[in-house]
Length: 89
Figure 1: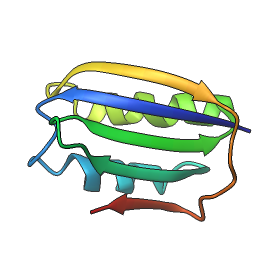
Figure 2: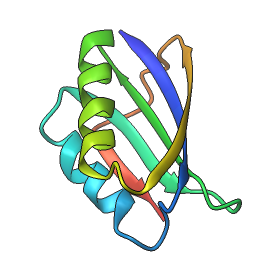
Figure 3: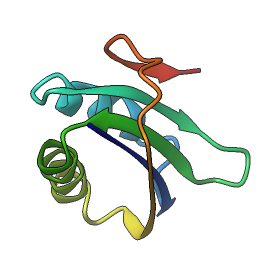
Figure 4: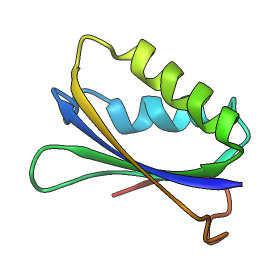
């Protein structure tokens, strides 16, 4: 198990990005959160097997590729704090 934190920049707020990400997460064996940040980016924190995390973020990137300018990724050890995947409001 791994934990990855993604900071997504571009046109990612006000376009349904969080809800689309949540929907995509339901098709993968991952848990975590997605939330808007005050600086206009979206933050995704996800835990799961490394390959599953990569497939998940690839699908997110593919589904909204025209909106994403950059993705910054930070890996760490999982906390086990998540039960499912949720949109933070």
